[in-house]
Image (cartoon, rainbow, N blue to C red; front, side):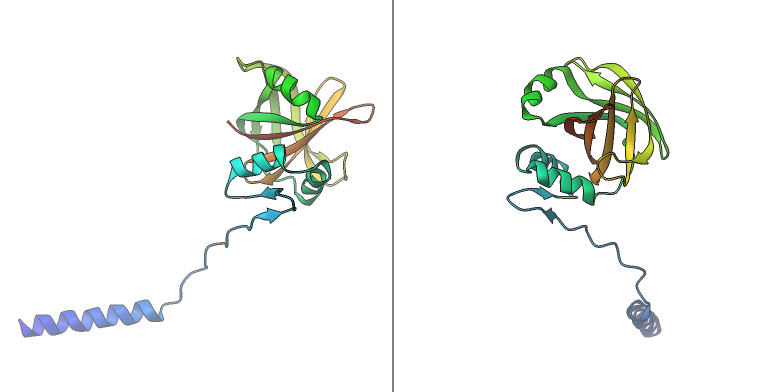
Length: 182
């Protein structure tokens, strides 16, 4: 019995020393910090709802534009998304009764989408989705190319939150919007 006990103590001590001496693998990536643009306009990579609330109600037009410029194209949305019009403000109430988001049928290089319209979520207004230079700053963005006088572009500003612009093809901003998975 003493021999078994001695072996157990020796084995336990050996295992403990190996745990202490064994280097730990690569540490997990540190969490992305909250981006504070001032006056309550914050992007929280760990909290989509807080980010959307900020973009809708706390960020100025200038802050929204800076957030868009600071973002890379990011991942392309996939599946059903909810959407909100950010500006012009006069469209927000009207748009929510007509436009509620988009349905993306995409892979890593793009694909297609349709818009979700009315409270019933009917699908209409198809578009091709692909990477292209942004109209705003010529940096990479996801182009949402409709066969109409409107052209959208989006960038992922935090994981699962896309900020976008709708442009008239002849020039000029129609609206800004935000998307997130439904």
